Length: 531
Image (tube, rainbow, N blue to C red; front, side, top):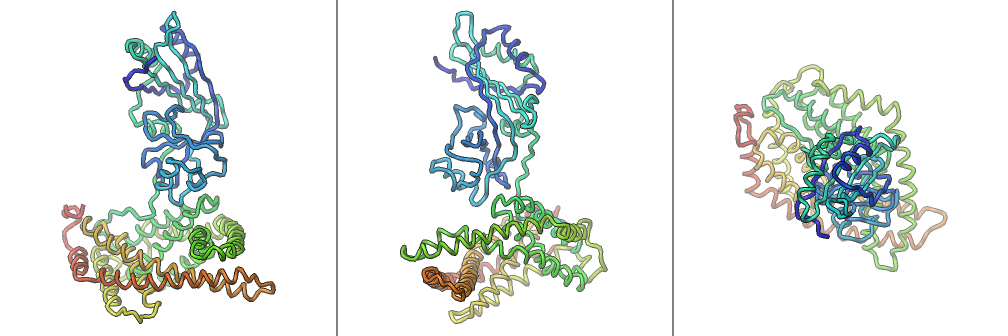
């Protein structure tokens, strides 16, 4: 028997429609034979950024035993069209925990360090029917999909009928379609994935740590600063549940990035706030940031375990295992401490107070800059920061102390945040080019800094190990070898930083920054080029 080349048709059905209504109605024209009836617990999976949804992929975990992926929206929830990943369990969250397969490679690219976690859980019933004539000849294949709430297996929240035509029986397929429509069934107006999520009450909210701003050039500088800081505090707060549940390490990373941007906005736009307020805000936000330093350091080392091991000869690799075991134990304790801290009354009181201060424009005495148009402050800050980097880069030689390079890295980070904050005020294309050049430099400076921080962390750990009453000679030897490897890599990266700094401060980039970040008196709506 050949299936027709006519596309399958899908119909969303009323939630209150019963299976008996469905079969009785189809039974008016067909003999019905049920050939399959399965029920299973399901969880629709995605990352915090909704990376799978953004690429129109549906991932479903079945009874904690397998994961099904659908890349073609027309086939969602059809078991015959699923790309299945077997041998998983309830703890499987990351792509690297999956068996090797083409599907794993796709998830690796989309998820990176992000976990897949349930955005909806329920019970899926899949029923297959053959619609036949009196002679038992199959005329149409019919599939009924029903999703129930996990706490109420009789309450349907989603019903969909799928008709699969058989070659030569186009008229009968149309008959079946009309019967389903008579029950209130209709072809979805949204895409299949959006129809499913909408019916389940799931609203995808893709997360982006970068602030999506659209500032008016004539907005007061204080109001603009308040908007920026308020948005970043909101992003910071969105990550808190994921940190408490320890879903993945990116929640803490983004918490820290959001908080870093808040601190950068306070420090770099300090002219719009009273001086005493700036001191207070820097101290309070700084105290929040310092709480998570230890956990982030541990996360970085544990995530890079394979890379560290590969830097050593095989004979020394096992020597590092006690250190990583120590890190894992320390991380478990630190995760619990941070979770208690984030859930504490003291933290909630502190972050809520800070949040409220920026929600409806920061209320304080005016300063010289507070009521000035934000476009003027933005131009001043970006130009000044770029010139500072350019001037420092011109002094860099092969004998320059490492600290000077670290200072330039910090200046570049501040410039990048300014571009995030104020990019919408200028020509979008030119800002993108400037940001790309800055990112290329920051990549090298970031690697150089990471190597320096990691070496210092390991040196402190080595010092602690050497002072223990029971010395682990193998661990000490492995640590010495690893620190030496990191030092060599740091020297190599330092040279790349010097080259990248020369490129970033060349005449072409000087002209780019000078021509892009300029102040104009016309309103943003008059500047078509900015869009």
